[in-house]
Image 1 (cartoon, one colour):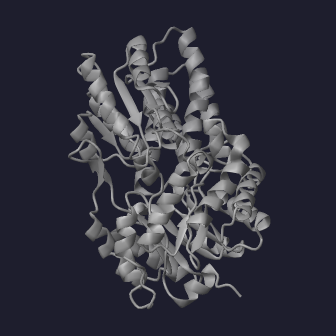
Image 2: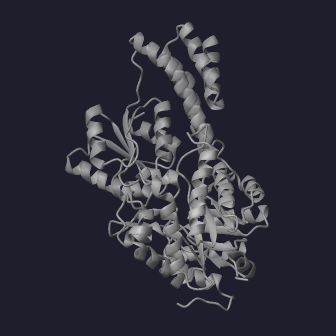
Image 3: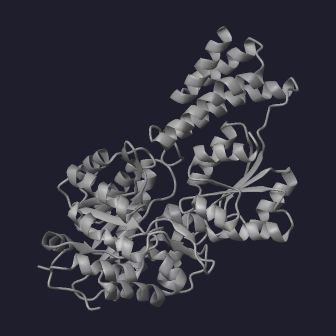
Length: 302
Length: 216
């Protein structure tokens, strides 16, 4: 039988990719444009970014579908194209993937709130997420990565929907946490312990955190996850905070070396799956690969 | 000292997110013929300030913040029409034009800041998300605004905060409006580098910063 992503996690630490939107903008995606439209409009450009991450050492890349739920796409008036754009996202990543590497179907938050804070019901969220998950599975994703969730209720709706629409795919779920003196909390006030317990119960294959925190801050959060679960733990940290660069653009406060310097500690704290988030690119992944694939005998080509 | 007790109850209603109580206490204030500006300042606003503090400490989160802001609105919905009828001018801390900059559709943080500014006594003109930079200036000119608040969630769109300040300069309006920037990627240093007068990491800080910029 084919080796699955879960088999790989059992064998050794797994490396995901880094930022995608920023790489697409480097390739000319205009500011404010919907990145998912490039899955059909400029598939070769999306494929090139995926290929650069695989070349840098990613065991899996995430599809260009973070904002691909019908509810999020509606902000661009593209809700009717949800199924098409997600299926294309998975296909493009699949085409870029060398044999034995994996495609994670990326599912980001809707950007809306459930009642009573917002207008939406859980059933409406589940319908949108099921459509997205089904299309990603149909396009060839190996597993689903529900990521950057700030509301546990929304994450659970996405997880239930994904499990129903793509029953054969493992579903990973990451939430984004702020660090307070009292501990780590999502925007809605969910704790690590509560999130892990609920996600486990709904059948998540792996759980973890991404975004908001830098790689130094991520170490403690990973430890909190490790204490709360026996499931594989996913960690994708930001490269610090953006600042104005000399060229008038934006650069990140954690330099490449500093960012990657905390990767061994993140692994040591109990992460099984690591990758980058905002401010990271193929260079970060290449450098991370040196730590992640250190003892695997399958170091990626440089 | 029934008044003091009433103010304490108003504060508690806001902190607890108890909408029926917030509304009922506003009706009580009307019935007792109290100075409504004082009711707002010493009663409700002290509550919303406490909520802001709890939010910053990580005791309160978005659901609590929203329900407290809604309580504030429920109370104001009772008080405002009476103040208008009685020709009592409600004290405004200042006029604020707020929005998420063009190219950026994220509005969760911006909405929180707008509702907290409003709850604290600012007059808020919310332009929504993906707002053209020129539009902020048009609206500020039309309303005679004091502050312009720009939100951006993306590192790519935060550059529009910088562009906006340049645009203000080009139009010779740099001294007329104070600019407050925020959003996940923004930092104090970023604000200083691009020449914004204010920066806020969260909605509670935005209120403090806006008040400071208004000299309060």
